[in-house]
Image 1 (tube, rainbow, N blue to C red):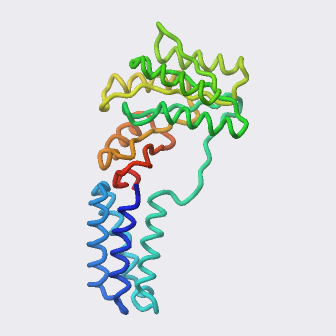
Image 2: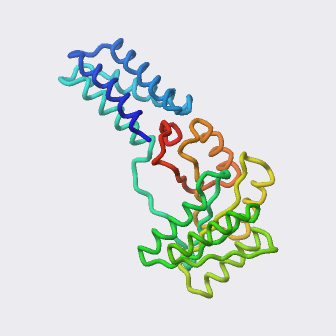
Image 3: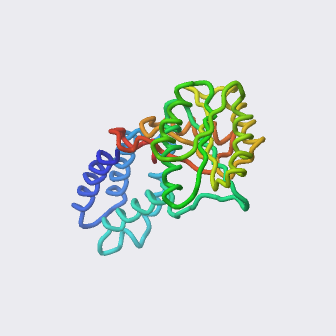
Length: 258
């Protein structure tokens, strides 16, 4: 995903290194190229504008322009700002004071929630944690069957109840998990093709009735700029605690990640 972005940044850096001495004009030209690279990668224009402004402010500092290797200083500033943008600290998942820890996955339809639910359960299983996967997407029968197949493949129990509501399934899954001494419960909730009130009201009710320790927003890595708008709406309604980016092995331009 990041190969094209990396190659374009390398082109900008190569041109920057060609200047033995940097001036405000050199820096401004470089930042214009960086901004174009980010926009071509489908980075949200507000993110690109803020990123370039932060780098330019620091790059125009006296210590940078007067240093022995000004180009390397600017490249270092860009690297540091990218690190800040992506998250510069390792944050572990929250856990409950008493098991089970409840993790709720949310996102639009087709973003990869069900597959990620299985990957997360497998990751926890490999760490010696027992997990219950919960089929809370009752809108799409195929989603329930997909979760059952994934659960069977990785050896993790799946709770799938018919003739009920997603809220009731999630509530009863916590009781089931306690009785079975499970360490984690993962809700695979429903999605839509776009954000709507019916979906959000259902997710807000699940959150209110189950009080999950983590709400993870799952985003399709191939979405591009629209990922920002969708994430903002989910965060406004649900106040999610973390984000997951799927399909990183695709040929998307990397904008959603940034």
